Length: 154
Image (spheres, rainbow, N blue to C red):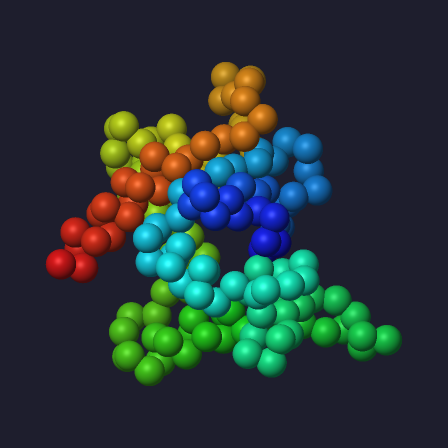
């Protein structure tokens, strides 16, 4: 994630889904940051460079490319996520499952159902799904999910 994608005053992230960002059909989405997420990003963000978060050694958390003739792939985010569940002996959820967990909760609520596909960063499927806005704002859905999350935690 790039520092330019975060609006620190509004506490939002505006970006396209990285995996499909080169497609014109993929929407740019504005996400409201949860309080804890905002606090951690503020504390841990990189002070310079093109990446918002770096390892303690100042290296990217994810790299997929080539170094010389050698293919390079490392994903510190996925490793930390997996290790978190190993340490706590909690039921392991993959990052993909976690991503869809919020989307499934949105789908179940009639008020937030229409936010599901933009929340996931999916391109509109039909003309009727298309918005005339250049940015899909799913901040209300993010606040709803944060509320649900903290109800479960208390």
